[in-house]
Amino acid sequence: MSKKRNCTFLTVANLKGGVGKTTTVVNLAAALAQSGRKIAVVDLDFQGSATTGLGMKRNASEHNVYSVLTKKVPLIEAINPTPVKNVDLLAAHISLMDFARSHNSAIGREYLFEDWRESGAFDDYDVVIFDTHPDMDCLTMSALVASDYYLVPLFAELDPIVGLSDMFEQIDLVKKRYNKMLSLIGILITKFDKTESTHRKLEAKIREGEKQGNYNVFTATIPASKRLSAAKLMSKPVVTADPGSNVATAF
Image (cartoon, helix red, strand yellow):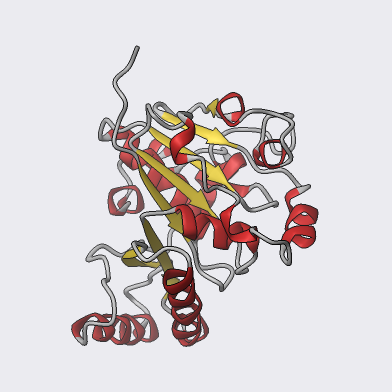
C-alpha cells in the first residue's frame, strides 16, 4: 500500500476565455509529473479540452466528472490514467453543461467537491488541478471552495487585464464566504510575444500590480508559439511532445 501524500488542490481560472487556461493545466500537469510528482487533472469544462489535451477521448467513457456528480460512479473509479506518465484524469463530459445550469441556484452549489479530499481517492497524488471554463458557475465556484490555491493565466492584451479586477472581486467573495484559506499562487502571462511592443507594455502593467502588492506574477512568461498548436493536434502537452522547445521550457 502506498503512503498517503499531502495533496494540494489547485484551480486554474480566469473568467475571460482564450487566455490559455487549459494549455496551462495540461502542461503544468506534465511538467510537475516530470519532476516526480503524481498529478490528477479534473476537467470541469464541458468542452473537454483538457481531456483531449492529455490524449483521452472526450465523452468516450461513463467514468467522468458528470457521472461522479450524479452518483452513478464512485469518484475513485472515475479517475483514469492518461498517456502522460504520472498524470491521471477525471474527464469532462458534455452533460456538465446541463448539470451546471440545473444546479447554479441549488442549495449547496458551492460544495460539490466538499468531500473529495477526505474520500481517499486522491491519497496517492501530490497535486489535483481543476481546469475550469470562463464562468463563475457552480463548477468553478466549487473548485475554488475545494482548493488550497488558484492560478490565473492572463493574456497580455487589454480586455483580459481590465477583467482581472472583476474576477478578483468575485473570488474575494468566495474567500470571505466559503474558503478563507484560498490563496492566489500567481498570475501566469501567456501567449506572450516579446517582439510586440503592446505585449511588453501590458506585461509591465501587470507586473506593476505585483510591485504594489496586489498579487504575485510568475517570473516566467509563456511565449506565443506554433508548437503549442502542433502539440494540441497530437493531443499531447507540449512539455512531452516537444520538450526542447522554448515554450516547454517556460512551463
